[in-house]
Image 1 (cartoon, rainbow, N blue to C red):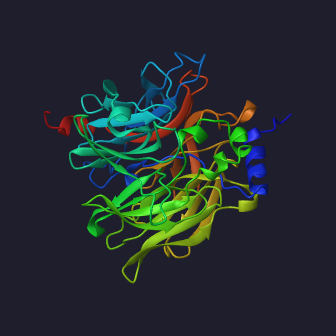
Image 2: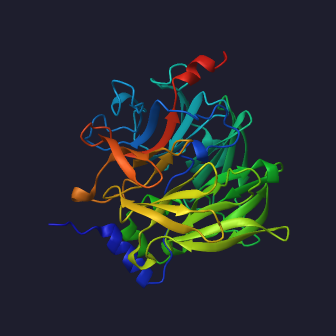
Length: 433
């Protein structure tokens, strides 16, 4: 007997009512999606996948934790958990990012203003929690740190909410690599801006920072069924992207991108100056590029059948800018799009990779793909559909073949969410600090 999933029912109701609902996905998960200021990209075989997992009450210690999995096929522990570092509490673990020197991972949760700093440089196979930054709320007024984006000697943190009313009016907080607060930048509320934030990504050559939008704590921490019944709550979702002057860190243009634009990916191909994003509810791909000197956003593709509400979440662009992986949560499907012409993406492959899927990360060479399952604690599926895993795949350009799986529920690790890749070689090459 199949358990009816209230998430699907709630979204259908929202559509029927003409409301716009967005999904909290993930960002900056793999080698091709790291900040351009992160040094020492892993261009060969990675040794580890670090998984930031949500704690589940009654499962293990119940806390959020950073889990290290061996992913080198030559290792005797291939596909096995090597280490798990608990933070001692549950805060809706969500995203993480490397510092520019790749010695540390910053991670946090959407339910709190805390940021956890893990040392992965001393021993890449055994990360250690070395610092907890707890002043984000006091210093910036923001909570729910989402995207951690390396800048030279600093970390730019995009928040989803604020401490005043726990709504979606938010901004970015800048820290130095020592964890000291520097300043904050409010998301624009004029010129078409709605004040919401989600992801961020930069193109240094064009001096551009792009941000996308979602909603605040008062929405994303509630069951979706409750939100769609609340007419006022349904007004509190973003539908914009903002173009910022990177050097000045000032907004210069607001783009209308309906349907909740989530992850932002710049093409890494030399000479390309365009970015792509996926709108969660409308299942559309949007291209951001300059036209006659002005940055514009243009709808360029459709993901699956929007009427069936596939709900695209995470995306990953290939290093040559010619391909895009897209995960859709509701149908558990991984799709590949040919971006040879970014103005007209074409889907060339799809495969069901889980009963629910969220994050997708790929190696620099594109031969290995990793997928995790969890979206949000209150939004994940129930019953037999509540799979919680890390799955590893190989990709030969024609077929995804699963090569290992870590069952996070069976191993009492929680809900598998965000990923980063690690390498043994980084330890030996890191200078003293």
